[in-house]
Structure formats: structure tokens, C-alpha cells
Image (cartoon, rainbow, N blue to C red; front, top):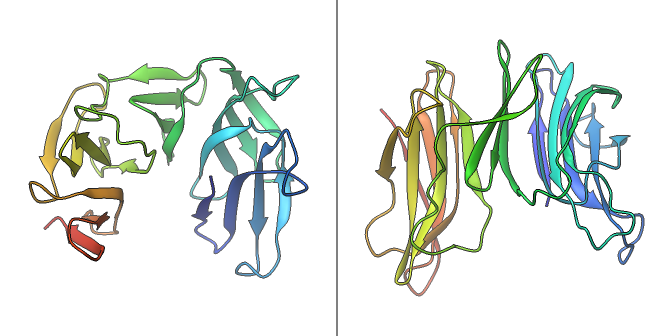
Length: 232
């Protein structure tokens, strides 16, 4: 479950579930960083849960916000939850969620307020001083479960948030944009793919001018196609 984040100063951060050998049990969540464009890597933190992790980095690279699930078959299980870390891997705060079973799908940092996490069908907000809490209504995943955790998740310039994900029915998989101008409200759902397409593995990003870019994979035809669109 690899996740890569680049800092404003060119530092690259990498998080994955890993072991010291191919077949090691248990594996654990690990964060590494590279300050030479990926030539070499230094592991700064291990033991961050054991399944389906995600993380985000503050603009100045001083804080990392990570979240991870756990596998209860590992005995003893590696604790899972939310972490606020310093750049050297030391823990500022930890909130234990072992046993809840929520799988991470995205995260971003709001410099003024804290961090947001997309956990399966719920958005969590973690302020600088409180515990992580659910915000807003449940995020629809469609009529049937798509079987993928891929999603795009980020902040809007006005303080809201956006989610881009696949939503499935028995006959199709469509890419849907959820715009929540207020994170506590349902917001607007906007289809990005065409009706009848098999569209999945969606993600997105907001540029410096506030435009939202989205891309996904369309496997409707005999050959797969990478689709792209953006807001005006």
C-alpha cells in the first residue's frame, strides 16, 4: 500500500506496509524520507499499524499526519490509529483506533486547523488540540462495493474539501466528484465519467490557481484508456 508525498522543499516522503524480508509476518507501517531526489532513503518511523495506511505532510515539512489500520491475526497486534509525528519520526500525539477496521484512502493537512483523513466512507478531522472526529455525512460508494480503495482527496481554496472516487453498480463503475464546500454537509455529487463506462482508479489534485484536475482508468473498450479532465 505505497503512498508518496513531496514536500515544498523537495523532500520526498514514502509510507508503505513492509517487512524486513519478503515473507515476514507481521509487517508494519513505515515512513521513509529522501532529501536527494529519491537517490537514498532514511526510515524515520516504523510500527505504524499493519494495514492500509495513508499520511500527509505539513507545508513546512515539520509535521507528518499518518493513519493506519491493523491486522488482528498478528499476535500481539501492532497498534493502529492516528499519529502526529515530527520530521525525525518522534511522536507528538497518538490516538489508538485498534479494532475499528476503517481503511485509509486519503489525507491532507490544513495548516490552520489540523488534518483531514478519508477512511473508507467517512471523513475524519483531527484538530491541533482534540481527538479525531467524524465530520459530515457518510460518503456514498455506489450501489455495490467496487473492491478498490483508490480515491482522490484534498482541500478546496474556500475551506471545503473534495473527493474523487469510483462508485459501482452491477453493470458499470463510474467516477464521481464529491464537492463539500462545508465539510460538515453532504455537498454536491458530480459525475466525471460517461454513463456505462467501467471507470476506476480515480485521483485528482488542485493547482495553484484553484483548478481541480482529475484522472482515472477506463476499461470499457478492448484496450484500457487513461482519462483526464479539469475544472475551469
